[in-house]
Image 1: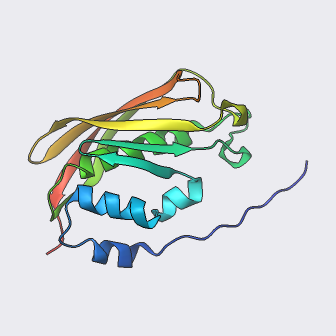
Image 2: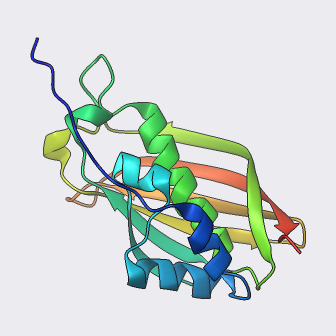
Length: 164
């Protein structure tokens, strides 16, 4: 068995969060995309923010061996993380300045096709389905390069006031 390694860098999230004070969720996410900044978790896993619209966010990842589980396919936890990222960002895109989704209260993911390196770029579109004062519901669909549905997910997020 050949051992492999990878090296990467990431942005400190604290200055990014401080710079976001006073911005709506949509303004913040568009700024993040424009500046090419990514959350440390997204950098670690190779999740890229492709587009941001009110209530809809598209992220993507290119499957790599280091995403694989012992069976030689992308780990289900990776798929869940990509979906959770897109859904949480979609909720954030609708929130006014001073509010943000602080926690995912539940997340259900259904898997339809295995994802491997030859699957190619996997796109995930997160969409807000309901936005209340304290909770939001969202869904996500992950598609391969041929447009086939590989997974779908739903979530509920708590909406909390931002730090004062």
